[in-house]
Image (cartoon, rainbow, N blue to C red; front, side):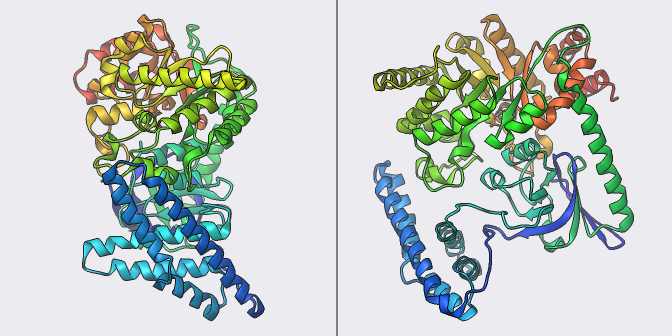
Length: 590
Ligand code: PEP
Ligand code: MG
């Protein structure tokens, strides 16, 4: 991990892993691990009884939810049901006359504060007690206490999972870790950037930061002890640096850099009406990746031709139960309407691995190795009802505008066959119900992101309508490097010849089968790689919306014949350092 701490007359500098570019300056908010952000206010003496009643109602709701989850868990395989049963029992126990419950009631009465704040205090106290125990098993119970507390708070506020909602605008979040689900709660109107101790550049949280246009850095050791809430900090995303309590000269310098970046952004904005066409007239299709529906505006504002990857995980995060068919349909239909006839490639659920969704906890179980476990299509094929509901929602939404269905983490043709069978069944069922659905039936494509799928791309191409190459996972699985682990972030390298050969083979296989091929991993949004991807034959790229103008600018500088020749030279190289040098030379950087 590249981390160091430097002192320069008062200001403290911490270096970590580059996350999302840009500069953010603002007050720090140091987020305690696992703590939810809750409002705290005083309760009038005559409202105290009502406040305790409100807490008791939330307690009862939480107990009911846990009991329901327990009933559902009985349908799981024996070992999982047993393990989950123990956990849910432990949670239920914490909500029945426990120290936690007593502590909350006492705090409401003695401190005269609202129930949410009292729960937050009680959780911190009880969790700290557990953490201080020498027994590792008991210490780990602190997480259970926090989880139970979070449920109580969600039921109290009735506006579930509202982390970071009460911070002043311009805040910079400093945390041990932010999960993709946490990141989904970040409102860019409030949060200006963030820095964390854990996490890597290619992790999903980093992808979301880039997508929201929020400067972010990861893997900053010693960060939490080095900054206090309220202190001014500068996050320099491109440099992977955070400066705490900056000197006036530093602030001035970064203020002017911020203005320069803004000027550049405005200049790039002028490209919106120009075609994404190389200097020798080859057109490239540029689309946006969406993490959350609210990003539609930024996709349209940069001139995206469509959505090349809609990550549907957002619908399943930060809630207690998964959404049903109708809710998913409404969400997708709204998105399709907002895109005004531009096509949307909707990827089916890709939770598991680092992308966890609380609502699916019982489906995911407790994998030995999450990245290699029940993730993405594997989860959908195991929990067919979940998959059917999602496919039905996509088909119904497809009646309102052009969509394609994309399956994540496909490894072999068996998964495609099973998925098609389920799709056919869902279509029949919807037709029987007389519900309007997409006509014609949307194309069905697969992510090429597992090395085995890339190597078998010629065989897979016969079974699908399009390929979307996911370079993030393809790099991770090919090189056996966890994309979200800051300790190995420096080893993650999409220019490794092994990764490039897989991309090339899959692209050529798709082209031979005459099916559309795109890249929707992070490589697509980095102008450093544009010439190489085009040189390998790629004509469709999908990326975080803020990256699109720069990639378009790069495309307009490229001569396709020269890029193809340079790609050929690059593909004959064995060393990734040499490949990087040849590419940077072509890009005019070296
Ligand atoms: C990828 O793996 O490249 C990809 C686009 O999918 P995700 O980042 O959502 O795993
Ligand atoms: Mg992926």
